[in-house]
Length: 625
Image (cartoon, rainbow, N blue to C red; front, side):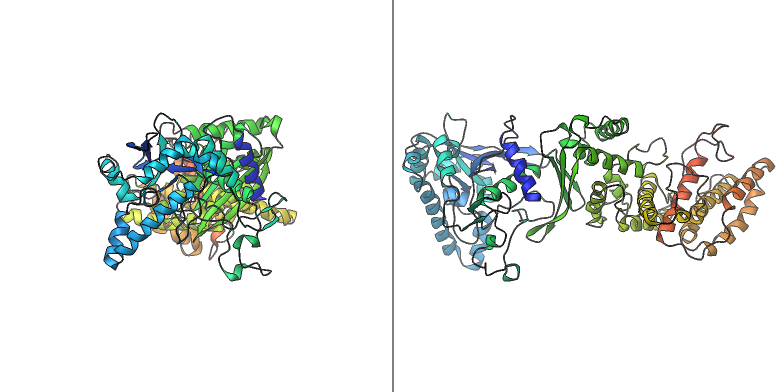
Protein backbone atom coordinates (compact mmCIF):
# COMPACT_ATOMS: atom_id res chain seq x y z
CA UNK A 1 0.00 0.00 0.00
CA UNK A 2 2.76 2.49 0.91
CA UNK A 3 4.86 1.79 -2.19
CA UNK A 4 1.78 1.85 -4.43
CA UNK A 5 0.69 5.23 -3.05
CA UNK A 6 4.20 6.63 -3.52
CA UNK A 7 4.38 5.27 -7.07
CA UNK A 8 1.05 6.92 -7.91
CA UNK A 9 2.35 10.19 -6.46
CA UNK A 10 5.49 9.89 -8.61
CA UNK A 11 3.45 9.46 -11.77
CA UNK A 12 1.38 12.52 -10.85
CA UNK A 13 4.44 14.65 -10.21
CA UNK A 14 6.00 13.60 -13.52
CA UNK A 15 3.22 15.59 -15.20
CA UNK A 16 3.40 18.55 -12.80
CA UNK A 17 3.16 21.82 -14.76
CA UNK A 18 5.60 23.47 -12.33
CA UNK A 19 9.13 22.71 -13.61
CA UNK A 20 10.52 22.94 -10.06
CA UNK A 21 8.15 20.16 -8.94
CA UNK A 22 8.54 17.99 -12.05
CA UNK A 23 10.18 14.68 -11.11
CA UNK A 24 12.69 12.98 -13.43
CA UNK A 25 11.72 10.10 -15.70
CA UNK A 26 12.88 6.55 -15.06
CA UNK A 27 16.57 6.41 -15.84
CA UNK A 28 17.20 9.88 -14.39
CA UNK A 29 17.49 11.18 -10.87
CA UNK A 30 17.91 14.47 -9.03
CA UNK A 31 21.41 15.08 -7.68
CA UNK A 32 23.06 17.92 -5.85
CA UNK A 33 26.13 18.97 -7.86
CA UNK A 34 28.29 21.54 -6.05
CA UNK A 35 30.81 22.12 -8.89
CA UNK A 36 30.52 22.16 -12.69
CA UNK A 37 33.44 21.90 -15.10
CA UNK A 38 32.65 24.31 -17.92
CA UNK A 39 34.52 23.32 -21.08
CA UNK A 40 34.77 24.36 -24.73
CA UNK A 41 33.87 22.17 -27.71
CA UNK A 42 37.60 21.37 -27.95
CA UNK A 43 37.72 20.06 -24.39
CA UNK A 44 39.51 23.08 -22.89
CA UNK A 45 38.61 24.05 -19.31
CA UNK A 46 37.16 27.55 -18.99
CA UNK A 47 36.19 27.56 -15.32
CA UNK A 48 35.24 25.51 -12.30
CA UNK A 49 31.77 26.91 -11.53
CA UNK A 50 30.61 26.79 -7.90
CA UNK A 51 26.82 26.21 -7.73
CA UNK A 52 26.63 26.31 -3.93
CA UNK A 53 24.54 28.83 -2.04
CA UNK A 54 24.51 29.54 1.68
CA UNK A 55 21.47 28.00 3.39
CA UNK A 56 21.68 28.72 7.10
CA UNK A 57 25.24 27.88 8.10
CA UNK A 58 25.86 25.37 5.31
CA UNK A 59 26.62 25.73 1.60
CA UNK A 60 24.28 23.64 -0.55
CA UNK A 61 24.81 22.90 -4.23
CA UNK A 62 22.21 23.24 -6.95
CA UNK A 63 20.15 20.14 -7.82
CA UNK A 64 20.22 18.80 -11.40
CA UNK A 65 18.49 15.93 -13.20
CA UNK A 66 21.21 13.45 -14.18
CA UNK A 67 21.40 9.82 -15.38
CA UNK A 68 20.48 7.46 -12.57
CA UNK A 69 23.45 6.62 -10.39
CA UNK A 70 24.82 3.20 -9.56
CA UNK A 71 24.48 1.96 -6.00
CA UNK A 72 28.12 1.67 -5.02
CA UNK A 73 29.72 -0.83 -2.70
CA UNK A 74 33.42 -1.40 -2.04
CA UNK A 75 34.18 -2.00 -5.71
CA UNK A 76 34.89 0.47 -8.50
CA UNK A 77 31.75 1.62 -10.35
CA UNK A 78 31.28 4.95 -12.13
CA UNK A 79 28.22 7.03 -12.93
CA UNK A 80 27.53 8.46 -16.37
CA UNK A 81 29.00 11.96 -16.83
CA UNK A 82 28.80 12.83 -13.12
CA UNK A 83 30.58 11.52 -10.06
CA UNK A 84 32.90 12.61 -7.28
CA UNK A 85 36.27 14.21 -7.97
CA UNK A 86 38.12 10.91 -7.57
CA UNK A 87 36.25 9.41 -10.53
CA UNK A 88 35.98 12.50 -12.75
CA UNK A 89 39.48 13.95 -12.33
CA UNK A 90 41.41 11.15 -10.65
CA UNK A 91 42.48 13.52 -7.86
CA UNK A 92 42.88 12.21 -4.32
CA UNK A 93 40.57 13.08 -1.47
CA UNK A 94 42.82 14.90 1.05
CA UNK A 95 41.44 13.02 4.06
CA UNK A 96 41.65 9.61 2.39
CA UNK A 97 45.17 10.35 1.18
CA UNK A 98 46.35 11.18 4.70
CA UNK A 99 44.69 8.07 6.12
CA UNK A 100 46.33 5.84 3.50
CA UNK A 101 49.72 7.46 4.11
CA UNK A 102 49.46 6.59 7.79
CA UNK A 103 48.62 3.00 6.88
CA UNK A 104 51.43 2.81 4.32
CA UNK A 105 48.92 2.27 1.49
CA UNK A 106 49.39 5.47 -0.49
CA UNK A 107 50.52 3.55 -3.57
CA UNK A 108 47.44 1.31 -3.50
CA UNK A 109 45.17 4.33 -3.15
CA UNK A 110 46.73 6.14 -6.11
CA UNK A 111 46.46 2.98 -8.22
CA UNK A 112 42.78 2.76 -7.30
CA UNK A 113 42.33 6.39 -8.42
CA UNK A 114 43.62 5.46 -11.88
CA UNK A 115 41.12 2.58 -12.03
CA UNK A 116 38.29 4.87 -10.96
CA UNK A 117 38.99 7.48 -13.63
CA UNK A 118 39.45 4.75 -16.26
CA UNK A 119 36.07 3.32 -15.29
CA UNK A 120 34.52 6.82 -15.59
CA UNK A 121 35.89 7.19 -19.14
CA UNK A 122 34.81 3.64 -20.08
CA UNK A 123 31.26 4.38 -18.92
CA UNK A 124 31.06 7.27 -21.40
CA UNK A 125 32.67 5.31 -24.24
CA UNK A 126 30.09 2.54 -23.77
CA UNK A 127 27.29 4.85 -24.94
CA UNK A 128 25.56 4.22 -28.22
CA UNK A 129 27.16 5.36 -31.48
CA UNK A 130 24.58 8.12 -31.82
CA UNK A 131 25.35 9.52 -28.37
CA UNK A 132 29.12 9.36 -29.00
CA UNK A 133 28.65 11.70 -31.96
CA UNK A 134 27.13 14.38 -29.70
CA UNK A 135 29.23 17.54 -29.46
CA UNK A 136 29.07 17.54 -25.67
CA UNK A 137 30.28 13.94 -25.35
CA UNK A 138 33.12 14.59 -27.78
CA UNK A 139 34.18 17.62 -25.72
CA UNK A 140 34.11 15.67 -22.44
CA UNK A 141 36.22 12.84 -23.88
CA UNK A 142 38.75 15.35 -25.19
CA UNK A 143 38.90 16.97 -21.77
CA UNK A 144 39.49 13.64 -20.03
CA UNK A 145 42.28 12.69 -22.46
CA UNK A 146 44.35 15.76 -21.58
CA UNK A 147 45.75 17.14 -18.33
CA UNK A 148 44.31 20.34 -16.84
CA UNK A 149 46.11 20.37 -13.52
CA UNK A 150 47.58 23.88 -13.74
CA UNK A 151 44.29 25.42 -14.89
CA UNK A 152 42.34 23.65 -12.14
CA UNK A 153 44.74 24.72 -9.41
CA UNK A 154 44.06 28.36 -10.33
CA UNK A 155 40.31 28.00 -9.79
CA UNK A 156 38.84 29.56 -6.57
CA UNK A 157 36.98 26.39 -5.56
CA UNK A 158 39.84 23.93 -6.14
CA UNK A 159 40.74 23.79 -2.44
CA UNK A 160 37.18 22.77 -1.56
CA UNK A 161 37.26 20.08 -4.25
CA UNK A 162 40.39 18.51 -2.75
CA UNK A 163 39.05 18.79 0.79
CA UNK A 164 35.50 17.50 0.28
CA UNK A 165 35.65 15.26 -2.83
CA UNK A 166 32.37 16.74 -4.16
CA UNK A 167 30.22 15.57 -7.06
CA UNK A 168 31.26 17.11 -10.39
CA UNK A 169 29.73 17.23 -13.84
CA UNK A 170 30.30 18.97 -17.19
CA UNK A 171 28.70 21.81 -19.08
CA UNK A 172 29.51 22.86 -22.64
CA UNK A 173 30.23 26.58 -22.91
CA UNK A 174 27.15 28.39 -24.17
CA UNK A 175 24.70 25.72 -22.99
CA UNK A 176 22.26 26.12 -20.12
CA UNK A 177 22.02 22.37 -19.44
CA UNK A 178 24.72 19.96 -18.36
CA UNK A 179 26.26 17.61 -20.90
CA UNK A 180 24.48 14.71 -19.20
CA UNK A 181 21.19 16.56 -19.84
CA UNK A 182 21.67 16.87 -23.59
CA UNK A 183 18.89 15.03 -25.50
CA UNK A 184 21.19 12.37 -27.03
CA UNK A 185 22.64 11.49 -23.62
CA UNK A 186 19.25 11.43 -21.89
CA UNK A 187 17.82 9.16 -24.57
CA UNK A 188 20.80 6.81 -24.29
CA UNK A 189 20.40 6.69 -20.50
CA UNK A 190 16.67 5.94 -20.79
CA UNK A 191 17.26 3.23 -23.40
CA UNK A 192 19.83 1.43 -21.24
CA UNK A 193 18.13 1.84 -17.85
CA UNK A 194 17.71 -1.57 -16.28
CA UNK A 195 19.04 -3.56 -19.24
CA UNK A 196 21.09 -6.35 -17.68
CA UNK A 197 20.63 -9.94 -16.56
CA UNK A 198 18.13 -9.08 -13.81
CA UNK A 199 15.54 -11.86 -13.29
CA UNK A 200 11.94 -11.12 -14.15
CA UNK A 201 8.98 -11.61 -11.83
CA UNK A 202 5.58 -10.13 -11.04
CA UNK A 203 6.11 -6.72 -9.45
CA UNK A 204 4.35 -6.48 -6.07
CA UNK A 205 3.65 -2.79 -6.67
CA UNK A 206 2.32 -2.68 -10.24
CA UNK A 207 1.40 -6.35 -10.84
CA UNK A 208 3.38 -6.32 -14.09
CA UNK A 209 5.92 -8.96 -15.16
CA UNK A 210 9.17 -6.98 -15.28
CA UNK A 211 12.89 -7.04 -14.34
CA UNK A 212 13.31 -7.03 -10.54
CA UNK A 213 15.42 -4.37 -8.83
CA UNK A 214 18.07 -6.03 -6.66
CA UNK A 215 19.21 -2.98 -4.64
CA UNK A 216 16.75 -0.12 -4.24
CA UNK A 217 17.88 3.50 -4.30
CA UNK A 218 18.70 4.86 -0.84
CA UNK A 219 16.21 7.15 0.88
CA UNK A 220 17.78 10.39 2.12
CA UNK A 221 16.43 13.04 4.46
CA UNK A 222 15.23 10.82 7.32
CA UNK A 223 16.48 12.43 10.53
CA UNK A 224 19.05 10.29 12.33
CA UNK A 225 19.59 7.86 9.45
CA UNK A 226 22.88 7.53 7.58
CA UNK A 227 23.76 10.65 5.60
CA UNK A 228 24.40 8.51 2.53
CA UNK A 229 20.83 7.22 2.76
CA UNK A 230 19.06 4.13 4.03
CA UNK A 231 16.57 1.60 2.71
CA UNK A 232 12.98 0.66 3.40
CA UNK A 233 13.24 -2.53 1.33
CA UNK A 234 16.46 -4.50 1.72
CA UNK A 235 17.77 -8.02 2.40
CA UNK A 236 21.39 -8.47 3.39
CA UNK A 237 21.46 -11.66 5.49
CA UNK A 238 20.35 -15.25 5.02
CA UNK A 239 17.97 -14.88 7.97
CA UNK A 240 15.87 -12.48 5.89
CA UNK A 241 15.78 -14.63 2.77
CA UNK A 242 13.31 -17.38 1.93
CA UNK A 243 12.30 -20.01 -0.60
CA UNK A 244 15.86 -20.46 -1.83
CA UNK A 245 16.07 -16.88 -3.19
CA UNK A 246 19.56 -16.21 -1.94
CA UNK A 247 21.45 -15.01 -5.00
CA UNK A 248 19.75 -11.64 -5.40
CA UNK A 249 18.31 -9.84 -2.38
CA UNK A 250 15.50 -8.21 -4.34
CA UNK A 251 13.92 -11.53 -5.27
CA UNK A 252 12.50 -11.87 -1.76
CA UNK A 253 10.26 -8.84 -2.35
CA UNK A 254 10.11 -8.44 -6.12
CA UNK A 255 9.70 -4.80 -7.09
CA UNK A 256 10.31 -3.85 -10.71
CA UNK A 257 13.05 -1.45 -11.72
CA UNK A 258 10.54 1.19 -12.77
CA UNK A 259 8.43 0.86 -9.58
CA UNK A 260 11.50 0.97 -7.32
CA UNK A 261 12.68 4.10 -9.07
CA UNK A 262 9.20 5.65 -8.80
CA UNK A 263 8.67 5.15 -5.08
CA UNK A 264 12.24 6.09 -4.07
CA UNK A 265 12.20 9.23 -6.23
CA UNK A 266 8.82 10.28 -4.82
CA UNK A 267 9.88 9.68 -1.21
CA UNK A 268 13.17 11.51 -1.64
CA UNK A 269 11.19 14.39 -3.13
CA UNK A 270 8.84 14.52 -0.14
CA UNK A 271 11.77 14.33 2.30
CA UNK A 272 13.90 17.00 0.65
CA UNK A 273 15.24 19.78 2.84
CA UNK A 274 12.78 22.52 1.84
CA UNK A 275 9.76 20.26 1.40
CA UNK A 276 6.43 21.88 2.39
CA UNK A 277 4.97 18.39 2.88
CA UNK A 278 7.32 17.24 5.61
CA UNK A 279 7.37 17.66 9.40
CA UNK A 280 10.09 16.56 11.81
CA UNK A 281 8.71 15.57 15.23
CA UNK A 282 11.21 13.88 17.52
CA UNK A 283 12.79 11.03 15.57
CA UNK A 284 9.80 10.67 13.23
CA UNK A 285 10.21 12.24 9.79
CA UNK A 286 6.59 12.59 8.66
CA UNK A 287 5.47 13.29 5.09
CA UNK A 288 2.01 14.00 3.66
CA UNK A 289 0.57 13.67 0.18
CA UNK A 290 -2.76 13.14 -1.56
CA UNK A 291 -3.86 10.90 -4.40
CA UNK A 292 -4.69 13.94 -6.54
CA UNK A 293 -3.51 17.53 -6.73
CA UNK A 294 -5.03 19.56 -3.90
CA UNK A 295 -4.32 22.77 -2.03
CA UNK A 296 -4.49 20.85 1.27
CA UNK A 297 -1.32 18.79 0.70
CA UNK A 298 0.78 21.27 2.68
CA UNK A 299 -1.83 21.92 5.39
CA UNK A 300 -0.55 19.39 8.01
CA UNK A 301 2.97 20.78 7.69
CA UNK A 302 1.63 24.33 8.04
CA UNK A 303 -0.18 23.32 11.24
CA UNK A 304 2.33 21.00 12.92
CA UNK A 305 5.61 22.31 11.53
CA UNK A 306 7.70 25.22 12.78
CA UNK A 307 6.28 28.53 11.45
CA UNK A 308 8.50 30.70 9.24
CA UNK A 309 10.63 33.15 11.20
CA UNK A 310 9.16 36.06 9.27
CA UNK A 311 5.57 34.89 9.95
CA UNK A 312 5.26 33.33 13.43
CA UNK A 313 1.44 33.42 13.31
CA UNK A 314 1.17 31.30 10.14
CA UNK A 315 0.37 28.13 12.10
CA UNK A 316 -2.35 29.85 14.15
CA UNK A 317 -4.06 31.14 11.02
CA UNK A 318 -3.93 27.69 9.44
CA UNK A 319 -5.55 26.11 12.52
CA UNK A 320 -8.24 28.80 12.68
CA UNK A 321 -9.10 28.34 9.01
CA UNK A 322 -9.28 24.56 9.43
CA UNK A 323 -11.49 24.66 12.53
CA UNK A 324 -13.87 27.18 10.97
CA UNK A 325 -14.19 25.07 7.83
CA UNK A 326 -14.74 21.82 9.76
CA UNK A 327 -17.27 23.28 12.19
CA UNK A 328 -19.20 25.05 9.43
CA UNK A 329 -19.31 21.90 7.27
CA UNK A 330 -17.47 23.62 4.42
CA UNK A 331 -14.28 21.56 4.79
CA UNK A 332 -13.37 19.97 1.45
CA UNK A 333 -16.99 19.86 0.25
CA UNK A 334 -16.10 19.17 -3.39
CA UNK A 335 -13.29 16.74 -2.56
CA UNK A 336 -14.17 15.24 0.80
CA UNK A 337 -13.54 11.65 -0.36
CA UNK A 338 -10.04 12.46 -1.63
CA UNK A 339 -7.60 10.02 -0.05
CA UNK A 340 -4.80 11.54 1.98
CA UNK A 341 -1.64 9.73 3.11
CA UNK A 342 0.47 10.24 6.24
CA UNK A 343 3.78 8.33 6.51
CA UNK A 344 6.09 8.44 9.53
CA UNK A 345 9.66 7.18 9.15
CA UNK A 346 12.39 6.65 11.75
CA UNK A 347 16.04 5.55 11.51
CA UNK A 348 17.02 1.97 12.24
CA UNK A 349 20.76 1.43 11.67
CA UNK A 350 21.26 1.13 7.89
CA UNK A 351 17.51 0.83 7.32
CA UNK A 352 14.43 2.96 7.77
CA UNK A 353 11.54 1.86 9.97
CA UNK A 354 7.95 2.71 9.11
CA UNK A 355 6.64 4.14 12.38
CA UNK A 356 3.09 4.65 11.12
CA UNK A 357 1.05 4.95 7.94
CA UNK A 358 -2.47 6.34 7.65
CA UNK A 359 -4.74 6.53 4.64
CA UNK A 360 -7.71 8.78 5.37
CA UNK A 361 -10.18 10.82 3.39
CA UNK A 362 -9.80 14.58 3.31
CA UNK A 363 -12.93 14.86 5.45
CA UNK A 364 -11.45 12.53 8.08
CA UNK A 365 -8.15 14.39 7.96
CA UNK A 366 -9.80 17.68 8.87
CA UNK A 367 -11.92 16.10 11.59
CA UNK A 368 -8.95 14.37 13.24
CA UNK A 369 -6.77 17.47 13.25
CA UNK A 370 -9.70 19.48 14.65
CA UNK A 371 -10.26 16.82 17.34
CA UNK A 372 -6.64 17.13 18.47
CA UNK A 373 -6.99 20.86 18.98
CA UNK A 374 -10.27 20.34 20.82
CA UNK A 375 -8.50 17.85 23.09
CA UNK A 376 -5.75 20.34 23.99
CA UNK A 377 -8.10 23.36 24.23
CA UNK A 378 -7.70 24.98 27.64
CA UNK A 379 -8.38 28.24 29.42
CA UNK A 380 -5.20 30.29 29.20
CA UNK A 381 -3.39 33.41 30.24
CA UNK A 382 -3.17 36.50 28.03
CA UNK A 383 0.30 35.60 26.74
CA UNK A 384 -0.32 31.92 26.00
CA UNK A 385 -0.83 30.75 22.41
CA UNK A 386 -4.43 30.00 21.48
CA UNK A 387 -3.39 26.78 19.76
CA UNK A 388 -0.26 25.29 21.35
CA UNK A 389 2.12 23.97 18.72
CA UNK A 390 3.22 20.36 18.74
CA UNK A 391 6.76 21.50 19.50
CA UNK A 392 5.63 23.45 22.56
CA UNK A 393 3.53 20.51 23.79
CA UNK A 394 6.64 18.35 23.58
CA UNK A 395 8.99 20.94 25.06
CA UNK A 396 6.81 21.36 28.12
CA UNK A 397 7.48 17.77 29.23
CA UNK A 398 11.27 18.19 28.84
CA UNK A 399 13.74 19.56 31.34
CA UNK A 400 14.19 23.30 30.89
CA UNK A 401 17.71 24.72 30.67
CA UNK A 402 19.20 28.20 30.52
CA UNK A 403 19.56 27.86 26.73
CA UNK A 404 16.16 26.15 26.27
CA UNK A 405 13.81 27.81 28.80
CA UNK A 406 10.73 26.13 27.31
CA UNK A 407 12.30 22.66 27.45
CA UNK A 408 15.31 20.96 25.88
CA UNK A 409 14.05 18.85 22.95
CA UNK A 410 17.31 16.89 22.99
CA UNK A 411 16.08 15.30 26.24
CA UNK A 412 12.78 14.22 24.70
CA UNK A 413 12.16 10.44 24.57
CA UNK A 414 13.04 9.66 20.94
CA UNK A 415 9.78 7.99 19.92
CA UNK A 416 7.35 10.25 21.83
CA UNK A 417 6.85 12.83 19.09
CA UNK A 418 6.09 10.23 16.43
CA UNK A 419 3.67 8.40 18.74
CA UNK A 420 1.70 11.63 19.30
CA UNK A 421 1.48 12.35 15.55
CA UNK A 422 0.38 8.74 15.02
CA UNK A 423 -2.41 9.19 17.59
CA UNK A 424 -3.58 12.45 16.02
CA UNK A 425 -4.11 10.90 12.59
CA UNK A 426 -5.41 7.57 13.92
CA UNK A 427 -8.68 9.12 15.10
CA UNK A 428 -10.44 10.61 18.10
CA UNK A 429 -10.43 7.35 20.09
CA UNK A 430 -6.78 6.51 19.48
CA UNK A 431 -4.88 6.95 22.77
CA UNK A 432 -2.03 9.37 23.11
CA UNK A 433 1.16 7.62 24.33
CA UNK A 434 1.24 6.93 28.07
CA UNK A 435 4.80 8.26 28.26
CA UNK A 436 3.39 11.72 27.41
CA UNK A 437 1.31 11.75 30.58
CA UNK A 438 4.15 10.18 32.56
CA UNK A 439 6.59 12.88 31.42
CA UNK A 440 4.11 15.72 32.01
CA UNK A 441 3.19 14.59 35.53
CA UNK A 442 6.84 13.96 36.31
CA UNK A 443 7.77 17.50 35.27
CA UNK A 444 4.92 18.90 37.40
CA UNK A 445 6.39 17.20 40.46
CA UNK A 446 10.08 17.75 39.73
CA UNK A 447 10.40 21.13 38.07
CA UNK A 448 9.35 23.24 41.06
CA UNK A 449 12.12 21.81 43.23
CA UNK A 450 14.81 22.87 40.74
CA UNK A 451 13.32 26.32 40.21
CA UNK A 452 13.08 26.92 43.96
CA UNK A 453 16.79 26.08 44.34
CA UNK A 454 17.52 28.74 41.74
CA UNK A 455 15.52 31.26 43.72
CA UNK A 456 12.74 31.71 41.16
CA UNK A 457 8.99 31.40 41.51
CA UNK A 458 7.79 27.87 40.72
CA UNK A 459 5.13 27.03 38.15
CA UNK A 460 4.29 23.35 38.46
CA UNK A 461 1.50 23.24 35.90
CA UNK A 462 2.07 25.70 33.04
CA UNK A 463 -0.44 26.09 30.23
CA UNK A 464 1.11 23.75 27.61
CA UNK A 465 1.73 21.01 30.19
CA UNK A 466 -1.85 21.20 31.45
CA UNK A 467 -3.06 21.03 27.83
CA UNK A 468 -1.00 17.86 27.27
CA UNK A 469 -2.45 16.27 30.42
CA UNK A 470 -6.01 17.20 29.46
CA UNK A 471 -5.59 15.81 25.93
CA UNK A 472 -4.26 12.48 27.21
CA UNK A 473 -6.92 12.08 29.91
CA UNK A 474 -9.84 12.99 27.63
CA UNK A 475 -8.85 10.35 25.08
CA UNK A 476 -8.37 7.79 27.83
CA UNK A 477 -11.81 8.64 29.23
CA UNK A 478 -13.36 8.50 25.75
CA UNK A 479 -11.96 5.02 25.11
CA UNK A 480 -13.00 3.74 28.55
CA UNK A 481 -16.54 5.06 28.11
CA UNK A 482 -17.00 2.99 24.95
CA UNK A 483 -17.23 -0.21 27.01
CA UNK A 484 -18.19 1.12 30.46
CA UNK A 485 -21.69 0.65 31.91
CA UNK A 486 -23.82 3.82 32.15
CA UNK A 487 -23.26 4.32 35.90
CA UNK A 488 -19.46 4.25 35.45
CA UNK A 489 -19.22 6.75 32.60
CA UNK A 490 -16.78 9.56 33.34
CA UNK A 491 -17.23 13.09 32.10
CA UNK A 492 -14.50 14.50 29.88
CA UNK A 493 -12.59 17.54 31.13
CA UNK A 494 -13.73 20.95 29.97
CA UNK A 495 -11.31 23.68 28.88
CA UNK A 496 -12.25 25.72 31.96
CA UNK A 497 -13.08 25.02 35.61
CA UNK A 498 -15.83 22.39 35.88
CA UNK A 499 -17.85 22.74 39.10
CA UNK A 500 -19.76 19.54 38.30
CA UNK A 501 -16.65 17.33 38.13
CA UNK A 502 -16.67 15.36 41.37
CA UNK A 503 -13.64 13.15 40.80
CA UNK A 504 -11.64 13.12 44.08
CA UNK A 505 -8.28 13.76 42.39
CA UNK A 506 -9.66 16.76 40.47
CA UNK A 507 -11.23 18.12 43.66
CA UNK A 508 -7.98 17.71 45.58
CA UNK A 509 -6.12 19.65 42.90
CA UNK A 510 -8.68 22.45 43.26
CA UNK A 511 -8.34 22.26 47.07
CA UNK A 512 -4.57 22.65 46.88
CA UNK A 513 -4.99 25.76 44.68
CA UNK A 514 -7.49 27.27 47.18
CA UNK A 515 -5.17 26.64 50.12
CA UNK A 516 -2.30 28.24 48.23
CA UNK A 517 -4.46 31.26 47.40
CA UNK A 518 -5.36 31.67 51.07
CA UNK A 519 -1.67 31.65 52.00
CA UNK A 520 -0.81 34.18 49.27
CA UNK A 521 -3.48 36.63 50.41
CA UNK A 522 -2.56 36.19 54.08
CA UNK A 523 1.16 36.81 53.43
CA UNK A 524 1.60 38.97 50.30
CA UNK A 525 5.01 38.90 48.64
CA UNK A 526 5.98 35.39 49.71
CA UNK A 527 8.99 34.00 47.86
CA UNK A 528 7.69 30.45 48.27
CA UNK A 529 4.25 28.99 48.94
CA UNK A 530 2.94 25.58 49.95
CA UNK A 531 3.29 24.63 46.29
CA UNK A 532 7.08 24.73 46.49
CA UNK A 533 7.19 22.34 49.42
CA UNK A 534 4.08 20.19 49.23
CA UNK A 535 2.93 19.89 45.58
CA UNK A 536 4.72 16.59 44.85
CA UNK A 537 3.45 14.87 48.00
CA UNK A 538 -0.05 16.34 47.73
CA UNK A 539 -0.46 15.05 44.18
CA UNK A 540 0.77 11.53 44.94
CA UNK A 541 0.01 10.79 48.64
CA UNK A 542 -2.78 13.23 49.66
CA UNK A 543 -3.48 11.70 53.06
CA UNK A 544 0.04 12.53 54.23
CA UNK A 545 -0.26 16.23 53.39
CA UNK A 546 -3.77 17.64 53.39
CA UNK A 547 -4.51 17.21 57.08
CA UNK A 548 -1.46 19.38 57.80
CA UNK A 549 -2.37 21.93 55.13
CA UNK A 550 -5.96 22.26 56.36
CA UNK A 551 -4.65 22.90 59.85
CA UNK A 552 -2.20 25.55 58.62
CA UNK A 553 -4.86 27.40 56.64
CA UNK A 554 -6.65 28.31 59.89
CA UNK A 555 -3.69 30.48 60.87
CA UNK A 556 -3.72 32.13 57.43
CA UNK A 557 -7.47 32.83 57.54
CA UNK A 558 -7.06 34.75 60.82
CA UNK A 559 -5.02 37.36 58.92
CA UNK A 560 -7.86 38.03 56.45
CA UNK A 561 -10.99 40.12 56.86
CA UNK A 562 -14.13 38.44 58.13
CA UNK A 563 -15.83 38.78 54.74
CA UNK A 564 -12.89 37.29 52.85
CA UNK A 565 -12.59 34.47 55.39
CA UNK A 566 -16.27 33.63 54.90
CA UNK A 567 -15.79 33.57 51.13
CA UNK A 568 -12.90 31.12 51.38
CA UNK A 569 -14.72 28.93 53.93
CA UNK A 570 -17.66 28.70 51.53
CA UNK A 571 -15.35 27.83 48.62
CA UNK A 572 -13.58 25.16 50.69
CA UNK A 573 -16.93 23.62 51.55
CA UNK A 574 -17.94 23.50 47.87
CA UNK A 575 -14.62 21.91 46.83
CA UNK A 576 -14.50 19.34 49.63
CA UNK A 577 -18.19 18.41 49.43
CA UNK A 578 -17.82 15.24 47.28
CA UNK A 579 -14.54 14.17 48.97
CA UNK A 580 -15.30 11.59 51.66
CA UNK A 581 -11.67 10.84 52.55
CA UNK A 582 -8.15 11.64 51.44
CA UNK A 583 -6.69 8.80 49.33
CA UNK A 584 -3.48 7.18 50.49
CA UNK A 585 -2.08 7.15 46.97
CA UNK A 586 -3.05 8.58 43.58
CA UNK A 587 -2.10 6.56 40.47
CA UNK A 588 -0.54 8.35 37.51
CA UNK A 589 -3.81 9.25 35.69
CA UNK A 590 -5.22 10.68 38.93
CA UNK A 591 -2.06 12.73 39.42
CA UNK A 592 -2.89 14.19 36.01
CA UNK A 593 -6.45 14.93 37.21
CA UNK A 594 -4.95 16.60 40.28
CA UNK A 595 -2.78 18.80 38.05
CA UNK A 596 -5.77 19.80 35.93
CA UNK A 597 -7.87 20.63 38.99
CA UNK A 598 -5.04 22.77 40.34
CA UNK A 599 -4.55 24.54 36.97
CA UNK A 600 -8.28 25.17 36.44
CA UNK A 601 -8.75 26.60 39.92
CA UNK A 602 -5.68 28.85 39.63
CA UNK A 603 -6.86 30.16 36.27
CA UNK A 604 -10.33 30.75 37.70
CA UNK A 605 -8.87 32.87 40.50
CA UNK A 606 -7.23 35.16 37.99
CA UNK A 607 -10.12 35.35 35.51
CA UNK A 608 -12.38 38.36 35.39
CA UNK A 609 -15.84 37.44 36.71
CA UNK A 610 -19.34 38.77 36.30
CA UNK A 611 -22.26 38.15 38.62
CA UNK A 612 -23.80 35.76 36.10
CA UNK A 613 -20.67 33.72 35.49
CA UNK A 614 -18.77 33.83 38.77
CA UNK A 615 -17.59 30.39 39.82
CA UNK A 616 -15.70 31.47 42.89
CA UNK A 617 -15.86 34.26 45.40
CA UNK A 618 -12.88 36.25 44.12
CA UNK A 619 -12.83 38.95 41.45
CA UNK A 620 -9.07 39.37 41.42
CA UNK A 621 -7.53 40.01 38.01
CA UNK A 622 -4.00 39.09 37.01
CA UNK A 623 -1.82 36.35 35.69
CA UNK A 624 -1.43 33.04 37.54
CA UNK A 625 1.91 32.39 39.20
